[in-house]
Image (cartoon, rainbow, N blue to C red):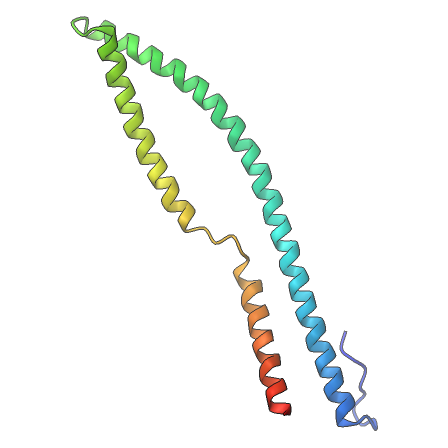
Length: 139
């Protein structure tokens, strides 16, 4: 809420400048609070996602172990000339290759994430710059 200075009132320039400074300070405080609230909301979402990812990964890992064991025995039946240890090695190598590619893609995607709210930070920086420039112009 802007400071109450009515047009046409006998308010001095000093009162007007103090009102502008108070409004600017309040705007900065509100933007800092908005930044804090946005960060808390993002952290809460990240925590929920983290729990779901861990549980999902545990189930997927257990299922993956059974699936790989099945594939080893299927390969052993399809190619009886291969010893069982070779079948495990082939399936394990394929799983490691696929996993490595997925990890590299995931790392690449993580590098593109910007966890800070860009718009709020930009607005905060613009207002801070405007206030600094306004104070320099007063002097």
